[in-house]
Length: 122
Ligand SMILES: Nc1nc2c(ncn2[C@@H]2O[C@H](COP(=O)(O)OP(=O)(O)OP(=O)(O)O)[C@@H](O)[C@H]2O)c(=O)[nH]1
Image (cartoon, rainbow, N blue to C red; front, side, top):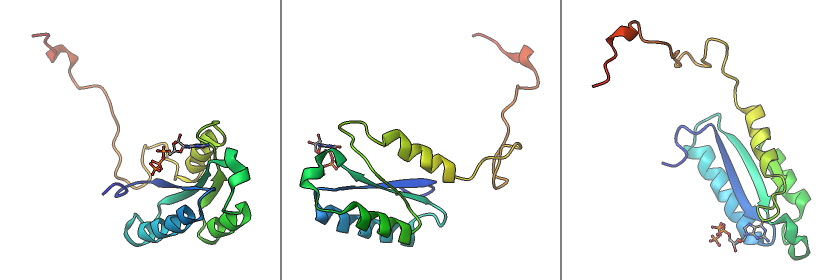
């Protein structure tokens, strides 16, 4: 219920915990099976500030991300590394809304009401 209708999902694992990377793969399967068909998936390997305790090689994660056409980035929420970049990359892949305000014909334009003189204050 959390990702129904979502345009993008960021799945985060902990680079210092191999188990979290395996769990991430289950979330990818879940999204592919039950998520919106064109959902943009980003994989974030968090805690890159703790590279001394790394259990998941960056290349393995990058190769996996490439294999499922996902964005990949290593982040540190603690040190604010690559956090903005994830959102920027996602925004580049989400379809642009055209000048008419719609990508699928489902949009609508906001405008002034026909008669402002009807407004009353109480
Ligand atoms: N060093 C480091 N610690 C982090 C980073 N991000 C989160 N943490 C720490 O990791 C711990 C878990 O962070 P949470 O935000 O609770 O993440 P979570 O996924 O809910 O983790 P769990 O509660 O263990 O499931 C906290 O102690 C955070 O301070 C990071 O980028 N670097």
